[in-house]
Length: 357
Ligand code: 9MR
Image 1: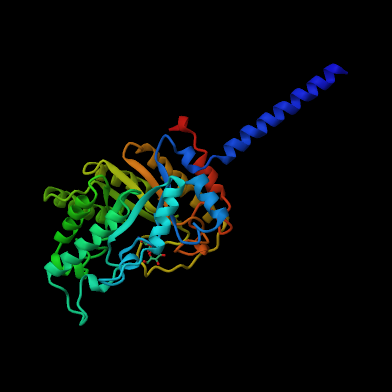
Image 2: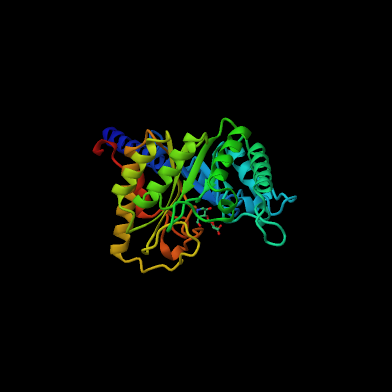
C-alpha cells in the first residue's frame, strides 16, 4: 500500500515538475528564444501601451520598442513653433518604466513631416540655409529630449528612389541634394554622440535598390556622414523577396556598417511589398497553401537572420498583432493574430533548433 502511495506521489511530483517546465517554456517570449542572437522589437501605437493585456504581451515577447507614429517629425513638430510631445513622451516613459530599449523613428522623412520644414506659406521651397536651420533645430531638440532612453535613431528614412534613381526627388532633395542626408547624420551625431545612427529604407534587399542604398551610404560616409547602421525595413510578402537576396543584402551592407536592424517586419499575404503608402490593404483568402507559404517565409527569413547574428542586432515587427497592422488584418502579416494570440508561425520562429544550423 505504502509503495503504491509513494509511486503515486512520485508520478504526481513528476507531472507537476514537467508542467512547471512546460509553463516556463511557454512563458518565455521571442526575446528569450533569441537572447543569443538579437533583440526582438515591436512597433507600438498608443492603444498597445495603454491596455494591460497588450502591455503584458509586449513585456513577455519583446525587448525593443519603436513608436509606430508618435516620434515622426509631423507628430512632434507640426509647425515651426509648435511641439507636440504627448504621445512621444508616453512611448518614452513606457520604455523608461519597463526597462525597454527604444529605437527612435524617425528624424527626417518626406512623409509625415510638416511642410513648414522645407517650404514657405506660399508653397515656395525655402532656401537651403532656412531649411537647414529648421532641420538642425528639429534634430537637436528631439534627440536631446530622448537621449536618456533612445539608443538608436532612424536618422533618414526612405531617401532612395524606387524608380528612376538614385535619389527620391523630394522637396528636401530639391533644396539641398544628398547633402541634406549627410547633414542630418552630422547633426544627429552632434546631438548624441552615443546614439547608433541608421539609414532606414524598404525594399532594401531588392538588388537594384540595394545597390543604390549601398552606393549612397558609401559616398556619404566618405564625405564624413556618421552613418553607423542600416535599417532594412522588411514589409515583405509571402512571395518575396527571395531569402537569398536578403542574405546578399546583409553581406553587402556589412561591408559598410557593423550593425543592421530589420526595422519594420511584416509579411503580406498578397503580392505587394514595400513601405509605399499607396499600397492596398486588400487581403486574400488564408488558404492552407497561403498559410504554409507564410510560415515558410518567416522560418527561412529568421534562419538567415540568425546566420548573420554578428551584424543583425535587432529585428522589429511592425505592429503588435494583425489587428494593429498598417497593412490590415486581412493580410495576415504578423506572428500574433487579430485576437493577440500566437499563430503557428510564432512557434515555428521561436522554437528553432540551433543545432540544425
Ligand atoms: O505604420 C505607419 C502608419 O500607421 C502610418 O499611417 C504611415 C504613414 O505615415 O506610416 C506607417 O509606418 C511607415 C514607417 O514609418 C516608415 N516605413 C513605412 C511604414 C509603412 O508605411
